[in-house]
Amino acid sequence: MSGAGSADLDAALAPRLAERHAQARYRQRRTADRAGAHVHVDGRDVVNFCSNDYLGLAHDPRLGEALAASARRFGTGGGASHLVSGHLTPHAMLEQRLACWTGRERALLFSSGYQANTGTIAALTGRGDHVVHDRLNHASLLDGTRLAGARLHRFAHRDPAHAGQLLAGLDPARARLVVSDGVFSMDGDCADVTALAGQCRARGGWLMIDDAHGLGVLGARGAGTLEAQGVSADEVPVLVGTLGKALGTQGAFVAGSHTLIEALIQFSRPYVYTTSLSPALAGATLTALDIVRDEPERRTHLQTLIGAFRHAAERLPGIRLMPSDTPIQPLLVGRGSEAEVLALARRLADEGLWCTAIRPPTVPEGSARLRITLSAAHTHADLDRLLSALEYHCCSQELTDD
Figure 1 (cartoon, helix red, strand yellow):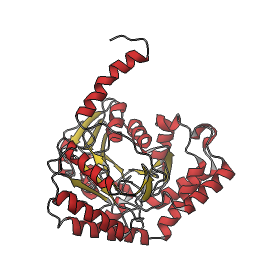
Figure 2 (spheres, helix red, strand yellow):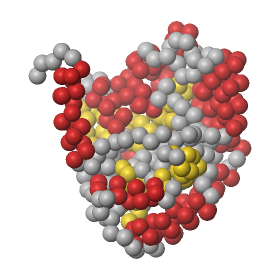
Figure 3 (cartoon, helix red, strand yellow):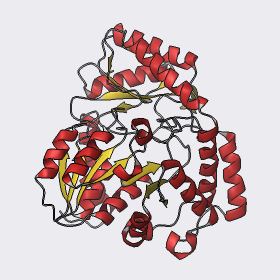
């Protein structure tokens, strides 16, 4: 089809948008007045149960003060890529702190988790190499493999033995990278990193863990899934983390050996050709790391909320929770249809409870769900309000498309 202007482009796109509407998969944004557990949306106050702000730091005034102070001293933007003139003192300080926190020799900042994942996989593998994925890995990990031109293999979700079988059948002369989320963003369950590391050790693969949803939340120091499972840094040579979830700011990092970080600096195109993270955000993240270290009661409160939610929700007729001990608590609705989950999300919104409907293609067909996420900024009263609404709408009402 040929076209020369916006009308032609609009005509080509309109059927695709109409199809999304017909499938009840059309995505729409809502504008909140701030980040956090208690926000103002569409003219009313709501309790936010769909944010990844697990420790309640995104609206902490101490981070705002640190961001402002760093902006006044170092500027609001880096002004260039890290390799030109954009690597500033707060960046260097933050990389050192992140390396120490995760038990690695070095860390490298990226502007987003998507860039960290795509840039790392493409730097470590190329055409003819192999990347072995958990079937439910984040889209950025899959896209990184495709961009690298490597061969993509997928093992059954949380099945290290299957990963080992796939590794055993691959050419040992080629690079073989095994990749998994630490905590799966839509299911809330955790990879068995210990078993994956064992398979890699036995079969000769490298292990990369994206712990975006585990860092700050799991482990005695909040150092994530590896700390919680007692896995050493040597067993997981590539660790990816984010700053935009539990740490409440923005950006991401890769942590590993000196050699790994030097290789990424040389070969990771998203790192080389991107303006550096704002130094003000780096300064705010340093304060967030202080809070994670000094206020373990935030994690304790969060774990209490998770336990209380599961204890109550599992006893409600009609409630189907997925197995998760993390702040991500997916609720399967009815037959898992898009219409059902949208109807429930609307009814909860009418009561001032913001729970996002997650639909295919983000999750597999027939598994549309509410992705309920808990935060240390939630109160027990917030939780009771949510549970009461779920009991009423899931147990006493037939969910149909409104």
